[in-house]
Image (cartoon, rainbow, N blue to C red; front, side, top):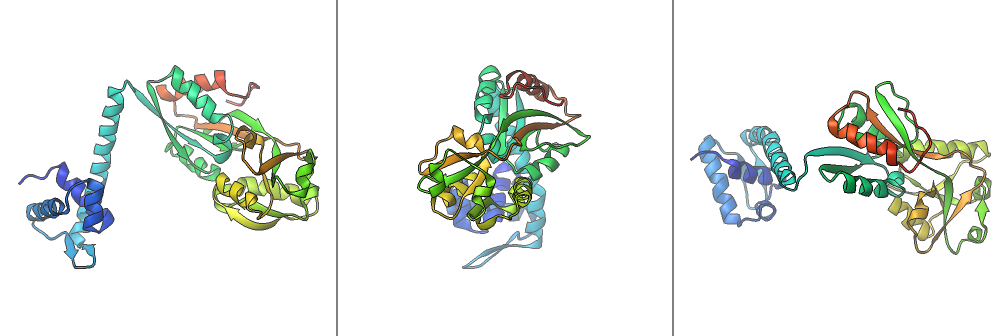
Length: 302
């Protein structure tokens, strides 16, 4: 018997699930067929790869080593298959882009839709990634362009201000302060607050906390959420108010209102950042379109 992709995929699935039924379902094959395939593989290698019992499946040391060895192979094959499918659709290149909550709730989706219309030959691989994680991913070229929050001065990167928004407060529509057209941060001193979690929202939190301290108080945080939708849901449930970006105005939220914070004059910039030496044809095409079509028309740093 010769070792083929079928055997590697079967063992990779079983090594991941450590459960025959779940592995067979993920492969969309019958469980007896999966069992036979694994047996053939073990006969070919000449060593048991799994320890089986009525309750669980465990990898032997040989199985663990084999799984580590084939993981990169199966990943490369999957990538090659996906690239072939894209080529058949006329896609000739790929761009890896990362975005934050503020970016995807603002002007970025409209911009990317326009880019897709003009450049259908380039596939956009979009990944949500907090700003702090984008920093490392850009430097290591795990992504080509990041749309992150704030300004990041780093000698190895170039950047362009993509969009700017204002600070707003999000309130339940029945909140007493919702009757006012505009608010100040001081108006919120007695309120409970909802914030994004520290690991993903650390840069935004630091800036808001500094603004609060400058006005003589620190926000009383009642609950935290990992995403914007989580923040909106907690505010709607009455857990507190939230400081956010005016980009929320692009997406109406039933039961919530936003009010501008008139004493917070600083803008919330969304910045497009890329590693300075990343000059692939795909990146250059994207950056040319970005400079011509971004929502913010003022000059940015490049």
